[in-house]
Image (cartoon, rainbow, N blue to C red):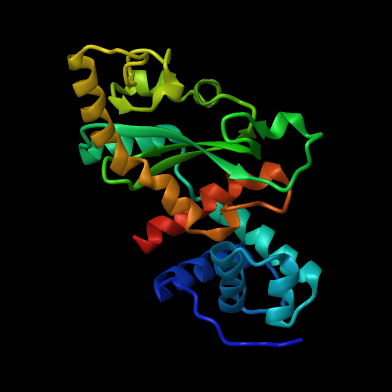
Length: 253
């Protein structure tokens, strides 16, 4: 077995934040002595999330058992996900910040599944995965992320399941989205469809794409955390991991 030193492209502020979350949790449950202190556990979790190293790899790298590594990671991921904003809370923050509009987009988190698992297969992306809905500010800052649904679920259906369309309408927030949300109704503005469109519609689509483009970078920010490039754990944990990473991404700023 070979070992080497490696850098993690995250700030000490993020490490201290995660360590603080773990510390408060241990105090709340009256946890006794553990193999790792809160800082070591936080670093292990960040390595797993940011670099996408498997449980076996981080366990070996940190010199602990596989079960211990799994327990540390699942515990911390759940703690972080609980700190992600709820949809209504996020929309209130958007109105307070005065954003002129939001960007709604779906992303697929690839999973390690076989062809027999049809509910997870996305015909659009031609792979197995979990559907996550993401609301972003005009500059691409993540505002809110949904839970996870099988990849076969259409983006518009997913948005309705999570109550996004209804709550956007109630909040009176203009939201831009791609053609996958055609039929969402008044709160969601989508491009014109079809070939041979009039010049006016082409100009409108071009302006719509320019406004929506920066906001859609939110999904690229999520995929910077390599754990989300392809999950090799239970698919149902996808939403929890995305919410936890949203919290960490906000700390990185």
